[in-house]
Amino acid sequence: MNNRTISHIIKPQLVIEGAGVLLRRSVSPRASNEYDPFLLFDHFAFNNPQEGPIRGFPMHPHRGIETVTYMLDGSVSHRDSLGNAGVIGAGDVQWMTSGRGIMHEEMPRRGESGNIYGFQLWVNLPAAQKMDQPRYQEVNSSSIPIIKKDGATIRLVAGELDGVNGPVTEIAAAPLYMDVKLDPASRFIYPIPSGHTTLAYVFEGAAEFGGQIVESVSMVVFNDDGGQIDFKSATGVQFMLISGAPFGEPIVPYGPFVMNTAEEIQQAIQDLRNGTFVK
Image (cartoon, rainbow, N blue to C red; front, side, top):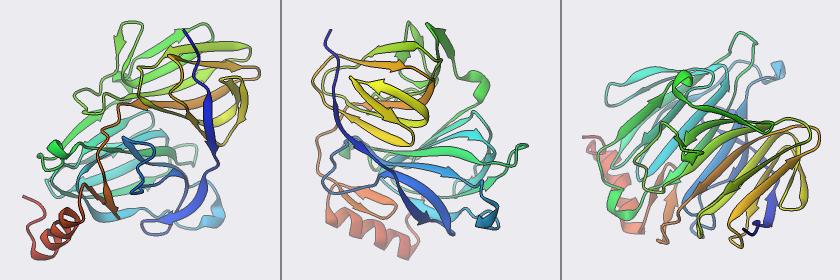
Protein backbone atom coordinates (compact mmCIF):
# COMPACT_ATOMS: atom_id res chain seq x y z
CA MET A 1 0.00 0.00 0.00
CA ASN A 2 1.37 3.41 -0.98
CA ASN A 3 2.12 6.05 1.63
CA ARG A 4 0.46 9.44 1.53
CA THR A 5 2.77 12.40 1.00
CA ILE A 6 2.63 15.81 2.63
CA SER A 7 0.74 18.53 0.78
CA HIS A 8 1.89 21.36 3.04
CA ILE A 9 2.70 22.26 6.63
CA ILE A 10 0.85 24.96 8.57
CA LYS A 11 2.59 26.93 11.31
CA PRO A 12 -0.11 27.96 13.82
CA GLN A 13 -0.83 31.66 14.24
CA LEU A 14 -1.51 33.29 17.60
CA VAL A 15 -5.07 34.66 17.81
CA ILE A 16 -7.28 36.11 20.53
CA GLU A 17 -10.76 34.64 21.00
CA GLY A 18 -13.53 34.72 23.59
CA ALA A 19 -12.78 36.95 26.57
CA GLY A 20 -9.17 37.51 25.56
CA VAL A 21 -8.02 33.88 25.24
CA LEU A 22 -4.67 33.44 23.46
CA LEU A 23 -4.72 30.47 21.06
CA ARG A 24 -2.53 28.81 18.46
CA ARG A 25 -4.77 28.45 15.40
CA SER A 26 -3.88 26.19 12.47
CA VAL A 27 -7.20 26.07 10.61
CA SER A 28 -10.04 28.58 10.57
CA PRO A 29 -13.44 28.54 8.80
CA ARG A 30 -13.22 29.77 5.21
CA ALA A 31 -15.61 29.74 2.27
CA SER A 32 -12.90 27.94 0.29
CA ASN A 33 -13.42 24.96 2.64
CA GLU A 34 -10.06 23.40 1.71
CA TYR A 35 -9.98 21.09 4.74
CA ASP A 36 -13.57 19.80 4.34
CA PRO A 37 -15.08 18.50 6.65
CA PHE A 38 -12.79 20.22 9.19
CA LEU A 39 -13.36 23.90 9.82
CA LEU A 40 -11.15 24.96 12.72
CA PHE A 41 -8.35 23.64 14.92
CA ASP A 42 -7.16 25.54 18.01
CA HIS A 43 -4.45 24.65 20.50
CA PHE A 44 -4.90 26.45 23.80
CA ALA A 45 -2.74 26.81 26.89
CA PHE A 46 -2.85 29.21 29.85
CA ASN A 47 0.60 28.50 31.22
CA ASN A 48 2.35 31.87 31.16
CA PRO A 49 1.80 33.82 34.41
CA GLN A 50 2.18 37.05 32.45
CA GLU A 51 -1.10 36.29 30.74
CA GLY A 52 -2.86 37.34 33.93
CA PRO A 53 -6.22 35.96 35.08
CA ILE A 54 -7.64 32.99 33.21
CA ARG A 55 -10.16 34.03 30.61
CA GLY A 56 -12.60 31.87 28.76
CA PHE A 57 -15.54 31.76 26.40
CA PRO A 58 -18.68 33.33 27.90
CA MET A 59 -22.13 32.33 26.61
CA HIS A 60 -22.14 32.31 22.79
CA PRO A 61 -24.14 30.65 19.96
CA HIS A 62 -23.34 27.92 17.43
CA ARG A 63 -25.30 26.59 14.46
CA GLY A 64 -24.48 24.10 11.72
CA ILE A 65 -21.29 22.59 13.19
CA GLU A 66 -19.83 20.18 15.72
CA THR A 67 -17.32 21.39 18.32
CA VAL A 68 -14.86 18.93 19.84
CA THR A 69 -13.01 19.80 23.05
CA TYR A 70 -10.15 17.51 24.14
CA MET A 71 -8.31 18.28 27.37
CA LEU A 72 -4.79 17.11 28.23
CA ASP A 73 -4.33 19.13 31.43
CA GLY A 74 -6.62 21.28 33.55
CA SER A 75 -10.36 21.38 32.89
CA VAL A 76 -13.17 23.35 31.28
CA SER A 77 -16.44 24.11 33.10
CA HIS A 78 -19.34 24.32 30.66
CA ARG A 79 -23.06 25.06 30.61
CA ASP A 80 -25.62 25.68 27.88
CA SER A 81 -29.08 26.92 26.97
CA LEU A 82 -30.53 23.39 27.19
CA GLY A 83 -29.75 23.12 30.89
CA ASN A 84 -26.65 20.95 30.52
CA ALA A 85 -23.65 21.67 32.74
CA GLY A 86 -20.48 19.85 33.70
CA VAL A 87 -16.69 19.76 33.68
CA ILE A 88 -14.38 18.45 30.94
CA GLY A 89 -11.33 17.18 32.83
CA ALA A 90 -7.87 16.02 31.78
CA GLY A 91 -8.20 13.27 29.19
CA ASP A 92 -11.93 13.91 28.66
CA VAL A 93 -13.64 14.77 25.38
CA GLN A 94 -16.84 16.67 24.66
CA TRP A 95 -18.24 16.21 21.13
CA MET A 96 -21.06 18.73 20.79
CA THR A 97 -23.35 18.71 17.75
CA SER A 98 -24.87 22.21 17.66
CA GLY A 99 -27.38 21.43 14.90
CA ARG A 100 -30.06 24.11 14.58
CA GLY A 101 -28.68 26.11 17.48
CA ILE A 102 -27.30 26.16 20.98
CA MET A 103 -25.91 28.75 23.37
CA HIS A 104 -23.04 27.57 25.53
CA GLU A 105 -20.22 28.73 27.79
CA GLU A 106 -16.75 27.25 28.34
CA MET A 107 -14.59 28.48 31.21
CA PRO A 108 -11.12 26.95 31.74
CA ARG A 109 -9.60 26.00 35.09
CA ARG A 110 -6.02 25.13 35.97
CA GLY A 111 -5.17 21.56 36.96
CA GLU A 112 -2.97 20.43 39.85
CA SER A 113 0.09 21.20 37.72
CA GLY A 114 -1.08 24.80 37.42
CA ASN A 115 -1.54 24.38 33.67
CA ILE A 116 -4.36 24.28 31.15
CA TYR A 117 -3.71 22.46 27.88
CA GLY A 118 -6.03 21.19 25.19
CA PHE A 119 -7.50 21.41 21.71
CA GLN A 120 -10.72 22.41 20.01
CA LEU A 121 -11.73 21.03 16.64
CA TRP A 122 -14.75 22.15 14.58
CA VAL A 123 -16.30 19.60 12.23
CA ASN A 124 -18.83 20.60 9.60
CA LEU A 125 -22.32 19.11 9.35
CA PRO A 126 -23.87 18.21 5.98
CA ALA A 127 -26.74 20.41 4.81
CA ALA A 128 -29.27 17.69 5.67
CA GLN A 129 -28.22 17.74 9.35
CA LYS A 130 -27.49 21.41 10.00
CA MET A 131 -30.94 22.02 11.49
CA ASP A 132 -31.13 18.82 13.55
CA GLN A 133 -31.63 18.95 17.32
CA PRO A 134 -28.43 19.65 19.30
CA ARG A 135 -26.81 16.76 21.15
CA TYR A 136 -23.72 15.91 23.18
CA GLN A 137 -21.38 12.98 23.42
CA GLU A 138 -19.57 13.40 26.74
CA VAL A 139 -16.60 11.03 26.91
CA ASN A 140 -14.85 10.41 30.22
CA SER A 141 -11.13 9.75 30.06
CA SER A 142 -11.57 6.24 31.46
CA SER A 143 -13.84 5.24 28.54
CA ILE A 144 -11.32 6.17 25.81
CA PRO A 145 -9.49 3.02 24.62
CA ILE A 146 -5.70 3.08 24.94
CA ILE A 147 -3.95 0.88 22.39
CA LYS A 148 -0.24 0.12 22.70
CA LYS A 149 1.72 -1.42 19.83
CA ASP A 150 5.30 -1.28 18.56
CA GLY A 151 6.28 1.73 20.68
CA ALA A 152 3.06 3.67 19.96
CA THR A 153 0.47 4.64 22.57
CA ILE A 154 -2.85 5.66 21.01
CA ARG A 155 -5.89 7.17 22.72
CA LEU A 156 -8.73 6.47 20.28
CA VAL A 157 -11.60 9.00 20.51
CA ALA A 158 -13.31 8.28 17.19
CA GLY A 159 -12.64 5.73 14.48
CA GLU A 160 -11.24 2.20 14.54
CA LEU A 161 -7.87 0.59 15.18
CA ASP A 162 -7.15 -3.15 15.27
CA GLY A 163 -10.81 -3.98 15.85
CA VAL A 164 -11.20 -1.42 18.65
CA ASN A 165 -13.68 1.45 18.16
CA GLY A 166 -13.55 4.88 19.75
CA PRO A 167 -16.48 5.91 21.98
CA VAL A 168 -17.65 8.79 19.75
CA THR A 169 -20.03 7.39 17.12
CA GLU A 170 -22.79 8.40 14.67
CA ILE A 171 -20.88 11.39 13.25
CA ALA A 172 -21.69 12.26 9.63
CA ALA A 173 -18.05 12.84 8.64
CA ALA A 174 -17.03 9.30 9.74
CA PRO A 175 -14.06 10.85 11.53
CA LEU A 176 -10.85 9.46 12.91
CA TYR A 177 -9.66 11.39 15.97
CA MET A 178 -6.76 9.98 17.96
CA ASP A 179 -3.95 11.11 20.24
CA VAL A 180 -0.74 9.30 19.21
CA LYS A 181 2.49 9.16 21.21
CA LEU A 182 5.53 7.42 19.73
CA ASP A 183 8.53 6.30 21.72
CA PRO A 184 12.01 7.04 20.33
CA ALA A 185 12.97 4.84 17.36
CA SER A 186 9.38 3.68 16.78
CA ARG A 187 7.00 3.59 13.82
CA PHE A 188 3.24 3.72 13.35
CA ILE A 189 1.38 2.97 10.12
CA TYR A 190 -2.34 3.65 9.73
CA PRO A 191 -4.58 3.02 6.67
CA ILE A 192 -6.76 5.97 5.59
CA PRO A 193 -9.85 5.58 3.37
CA SER A 194 -9.46 7.00 -0.10
CA GLY A 195 -10.72 10.57 -0.40
CA HIS A 196 -10.66 11.34 3.32
CA THR A 197 -9.09 14.63 4.38
CA THR A 198 -6.20 13.88 6.74
CA LEU A 199 -4.32 16.15 9.16
CA ALA A 200 -1.71 15.55 11.87
CA TYR A 201 -1.06 18.18 14.55
CA VAL A 202 2.43 17.71 16.03
CA PHE A 203 2.58 19.30 19.48
CA GLU A 204 5.51 17.53 21.15
CA GLY A 205 8.81 16.38 19.64
CA ALA A 206 9.43 15.64 15.97
CA ALA A 207 8.80 12.83 13.51
CA GLU A 208 9.12 11.77 9.91
CA PHE A 209 5.80 11.94 8.07
CA GLY A 210 5.70 10.69 4.51
CA GLY A 211 9.49 11.01 4.20
CA GLN A 212 9.66 14.55 5.61
CA ILE A 213 10.81 15.61 9.09
CA VAL A 214 8.21 17.69 10.94
CA GLU A 215 8.90 19.42 14.25
CA SER A 216 6.41 20.72 16.80
CA VAL A 217 4.39 22.84 16.75
CA SER A 218 3.00 22.16 13.25
CA MET A 219 -0.12 21.05 11.40
CA VAL A 220 0.61 18.55 8.62
CA VAL A 221 -1.82 18.39 5.69
CA PHE A 222 -1.59 15.20 3.61
CA ASN A 223 -2.27 14.64 -0.06
CA ASP A 224 -4.85 12.03 -1.07
CA ASP A 225 -2.24 10.07 -3.02
CA GLY A 226 -1.90 6.88 -1.01
CA GLY A 227 -3.71 4.45 1.20
CA GLN A 228 -1.80 4.82 4.46
CA ILE A 229 0.07 7.25 6.69
CA ASP A 230 3.57 6.22 7.78
CA PHE A 231 4.97 7.88 10.92
CA LYS A 232 8.53 7.38 12.17
CA SER A 233 10.01 8.88 15.33
CA ALA A 234 13.72 9.14 16.13
CA THR A 235 13.50 10.95 19.48
CA GLY A 236 9.80 10.71 20.41
CA VAL A 237 6.72 12.61 19.26
CA GLN A 238 3.09 13.27 20.17
CA PHE A 239 0.44 14.35 17.68
CA MET A 240 -3.29 14.42 17.01
CA LEU A 241 -4.27 12.39 13.94
CA ILE A 242 -7.48 13.65 12.32
CA SER A 243 -9.25 12.30 9.24
CA GLY A 244 -12.76 12.45 7.82
CA ALA A 245 -14.95 12.22 4.74
CA PRO A 246 -15.53 15.57 2.98
CA PHE A 247 -19.11 16.57 2.17
CA GLY A 248 -18.28 18.49 -1.00
CA GLU A 249 -20.86 21.19 -0.23
CA PRO A 250 -20.39 24.98 -0.41
CA ILE A 251 -20.21 26.68 2.98
CA VAL A 252 -20.75 30.20 4.27
CA PRO A 253 -18.96 30.72 7.60
CA TYR A 254 -19.87 33.66 9.82
CA GLY A 255 -18.36 33.69 13.31
CA PRO A 256 -19.89 30.77 15.26
CA PHE A 257 -22.23 29.83 12.38
CA VAL A 258 -21.36 27.69 9.35
CA MET A 259 -24.19 27.21 6.90
CA ASN A 260 -24.50 26.50 3.16
CA THR A 261 -25.93 29.83 1.96
CA ALA A 262 -25.80 33.51 2.89
CA GLU A 263 -29.58 33.41 3.38
CA GLU A 264 -29.19 30.72 6.06
CA ILE A 265 -26.63 32.90 7.85
CA GLN A 266 -29.04 35.83 7.78
CA GLN A 267 -31.74 33.57 9.21
CA ALA A 268 -29.43 32.50 12.06
CA ILE A 269 -28.72 36.14 12.92
CA GLN A 270 -32.43 36.97 12.77
CA ASP A 271 -33.31 33.99 14.98
CA LEU A 272 -30.71 35.14 17.51
CA ARG A 273 -32.14 38.67 17.54
CA ASN A 274 -35.79 37.69 17.87
CA GLY A 275 -35.28 34.99 20.53
CA THR A 276 -36.09 31.94 18.40
CA PHE A 277 -32.53 30.68 17.98
CA VAL A 278 -32.87 28.03 20.70
CA LYS A 279 -35.93 25.79 20.90
